[in-house]
Length: 126
Ligand SMILES: [Zn+2]
Image 1 (cartoon, rainbow, N blue to C red):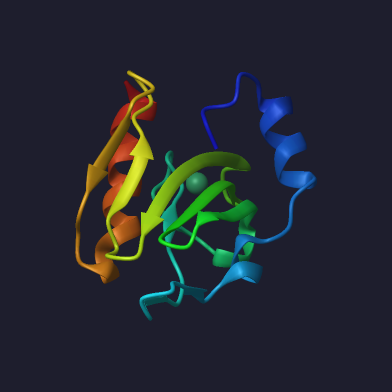
Image 2 (image 1 turned 90 degrees about the vertical axis):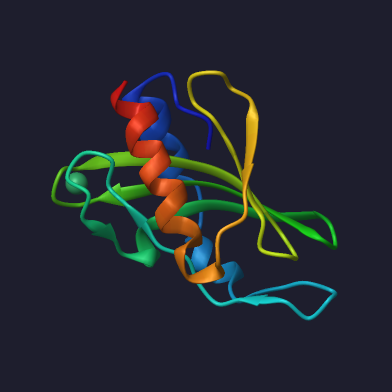
């Protein structure tokens, strides 16, 4: 999700949503299949178990899936926000935290989320 204003807001979001993995694998009308995704805690960089990502997965049009989620790191007890769109050619678009503009990258599917998360690390720390 977009960067929450408060810890309370982030926690409320997490508590009121289902695991994002419930919506996987993602399927697109062109046959593309995305099995899972990974994300890391923005503080300690350890991998957050997929089950601890909670939020919404929507498909506004057949070619695009939108994921709005919070990932909980149980070591830090911190929530890391994720807001991204995935297209059926595996293009990933996400909100750049400083400018609040959508940006687009086109990595190979296995590195999709890692690169997005690395980007989030930089923006959240700045
Ligand atoms: Zn952590």
